[in-house]
Image 1 (spheres, rainbow, N blue to C red):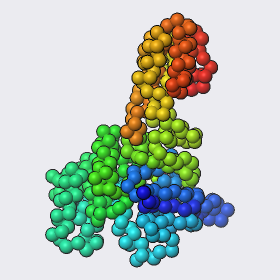
Image 2: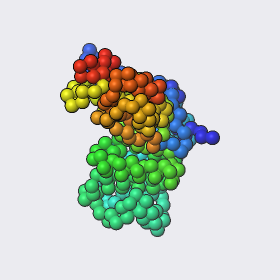
Image 3: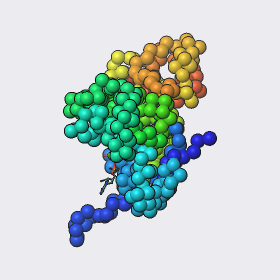
Image 4: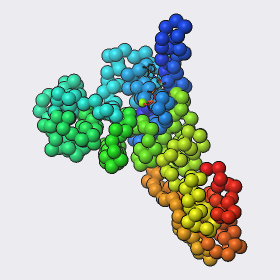
Length: 359
Ligand SMILES: Nc1ncnc2c1ncn2[C@@H]1O[C@H](COP(=O)(O)OP(=O)(O)OP(=O)(O)O)[C@@H](O)[C@H]1O
Ligand SMILES: [Mg+2]
């Protein structure tokens, strides 16, 4: 059975009001009553727009901030009211990586990775061996003697990951760790974080405003807005059947697989037939099912928009298809599709359907 490695119980973090006298504003509740269990061994995503409280939540987890109310429990230790000395071993069990890498410019790559080992009092020889092992693990064994300024963003983040792993933490917190990287480098770093989780068994919490990050590596996800968790669950469930408007916005902005009204107008110019969008996922329909239903009714289906990608390593997306055939056959095919999956009927150019017009 899994057990929580990190728990928040009605956790609140309030920052005092800024300004003085009559210009003094209201206090900011950056985290507003969060209850959340993150299990040992999972890759957990916290997604939300800027200002949602994501960074404050992770800063509560590694005790860089203390809660105003409620509690945070790390690996069985309640952080509430602990002294600096008591917090030290808790922090030692947590690695952290950042958007801006936070490397020491004056030290080499090896020197950066060795730093937490020096602080922990490791003997020189053990340190050297550990640094070599870590740099090989993250794939930059050849960069040991280089200074950070000479590295690419992806290489810098690999150093950041090696440094975070140096003292063998059980938990790795990644706050926007890929937000400064291009898409290809992002994919490489995410693959590395996945290896950290799978090969080293480290629990990974990724904080992000990018759906792509959650889509590719997270098992579960919490969606935050205004300091609260507004949606929580299995990543596949949350993004294939989003309930909260914020989650829906993330899905819509990340996938762009459902035609907007402008796209639809262009599709209609090119395709006079009936245009429908069919959802493809594990829960509702597969593309094979769509093809089969159309064949059964003797309807031609041309894919005109959309695509299928992966979410938590499972199929996910939508296909927009132009249906061409006799009216009765197209109707029957549409009913067949509706029985299999979620369908949006956009109608034809001459007879647009109302249900597709709200996008
Ligand atoms: N030290 C602080 N003092 C006062 N207010 C703060 C402080 N830190 C954060 N806040 C406020 O708390 C809220 C949440 O901030 P936080 O940095 O946690 O959001 P975030 O979700 O990480 O955003 P981003 O995606 O921009 O990093 C914001 O309104 C922010 O202005
Ligand atoms: Mg932040």
